Image (cartoon, rainbow, N blue to C red; front, side, top):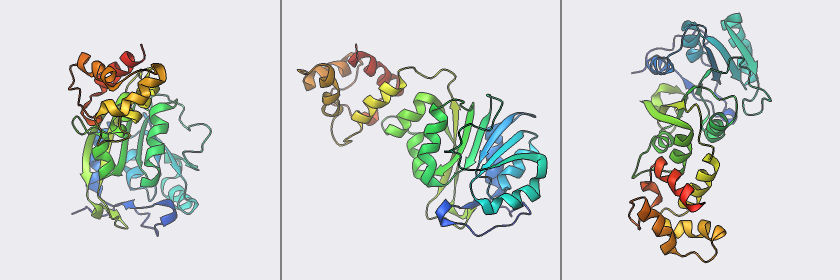
Length: 270
């Protein structure tokens, strides 16, 4: 059972328009904090502090906490509770012109509404400044796709693994939130690669073609991609790349590793 909610701010009425589900399980907070591995004075950006349960733990770690909250009604109680212990910014994290973190070696922690999971992941994986580590609460199904390995790779896992090493921290039951959502969740850790692959965008474009029809063998999906450069190309030409990579010519997209996608992109664009 979840441990009692320990922050004295209480639980406000959740707003469907913001996709709010407030975390009440202190044991999940403890696991998030352990995964974050925060050092005294280290900068951490929290998206959506909400009722402050996770924020309280971050403050307790002696980290420098910068929190961005969109819901105006939560600002006053957050200020009242934390005062100058955190830097609180009211706004939409996806619309801020400049991230409120001076230290480029910052970490990001968030229990975010599921309807903005994709843009949050894309923004912080690909745009500067990038955190060194992200700890995100996401829908369980999304977490499964992020951490998937062959033969269950997805386009999302390809994109995430190009920019970060991804792992599951903990699965989280729906009862750990109020109001209780209809789905379970999971916490995922992203350790961002210091130097991302300069050809990442081209690899993603290739993978998008590869996953366009998962029921088809990969050579069918990638033939249009190859024909942009070689109009007379055939499926056998695509298969020849697979053979060179020691892959079955009938392979499907979900079977390729990040390394194989990377090599395939290099071969098809040489």
